[in-house]
Amino acid sequence: MIIGKHFEFEAAHQLPDEECYGKCRNMHGHTYKLTVEVAGEITDKGWVCNFSEVKAIVQEKVIKVLDHSFLNDIIADLTTAENILYWMRNQVEADIVEMTGAKLYCLTLYETSNSFAKLYCQP
Figure (tube, rainbow, N blue to C red):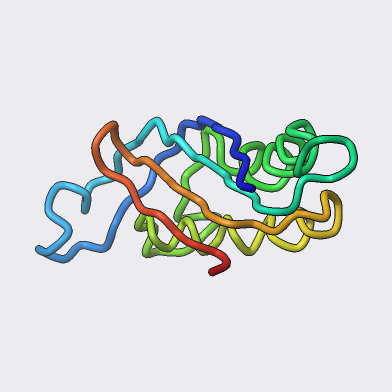
């Protein structure tokens, strides 16, 4: 069974000054939309885990850190959606397993309404 939670945050970033990055070489911001999916068996409580547990972990480890920030100061100079997802996984995966008993399944990060990256964290 897979359950998920949606989050939103505002942040700015700047990609390297190379032609391949186009206008993204300039500092700019996004309203990022993040979906966190966890997987596990349904427990005797009738759920994989409590949605509030996932929310608390992601809020503390990701949203509070990144919201209204300059991502290059936190993550790295190459703040592509793909690299942001790797950073996010590293922030929450162990806590999700430890606190909920479920496993992190997938993270999806929308940079715009029609551009996203997806990171599968387990088969």
